[in-house]
Image (cartoon, rainbow, N blue to C red; front, side, top):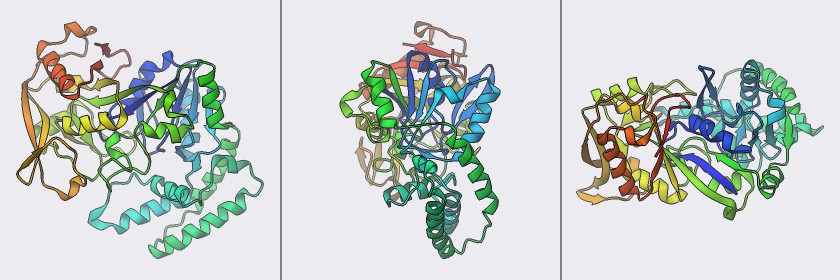
Length: 420
């Protein structure tokens, strides 16, 4: 069977740390979607490490890590990540595997991303400019190049054909940047990619399951950024929900067991798009400061707000969440009062449903207030030792979602996780 860990908000929920925490219990960790627009932050030997494409179990000895076919892969970024791993003594050549069906991000994909975002003016969607969207467009348009293609003797001619197609699109944008240096770096990185373990991902993962290996699927971004069910068009370009595990790794739905959903004790978002509970006051700034809320990939300051239970219940529903992990609870330690959004008011009517297109509506969140716990919880090791005000806060969220919060993160360290 395969368990799934994914984000329930707009990403940045702390998935990297949570996967790292659970990794020792699993034999295989697999990324099933997204690309280098993800940033999973870990602390290894007291040092901060951000992984963008490589699964977060890579630091666990004996764990195999698979980049699945649902991912779009930047070979240059992958090489840089591997160099970082090597500096920590990680034998990535032994523990990292890449599906041959994984789509490649080309330098022209990044150029198209930049050109497209620039053309939108004030309607920018907040792209990370990593070439993710254009790469997925080539995938669905049946034009893309895949990891398995790098071993084809005709790869260069395939590359040139796709590059010429991209150039026509760039000409339409009047895009003038010279990317020749990027291409040189890219082809050097492809040589590195050829030296890694390229496998048939679907057979790799199913063999592991058949051998009763414990497999964990690691998601990127968050459920509210899902291409179908997120806040379209302010979304990512892949299926970020549990359904994406099946198509992103090549496994049957009946092989999925636990779906572990991650939420912050509050809510954040990077880039454009609707965010009903966003705070533009001193509370939002305090959360940003205490939570170090800056994008792991982009460095952009994250928008901060109160936890949104309407959106959270929605993402629990579409994912079939069985357990919840609450992260960054310690960020709220200083607050006298906390708020929880339990419904929306839209055009004078109250609803507990996420509407079709949030950005076209004037959504007013309806809050319930809670007394803050006003205590440093970062050193607490047991659930029973948490302040009663915090236990009340968590219990209320559990009752609303009808799902139990099994784990609470009370600091950045891997050891700072409390099991309920």
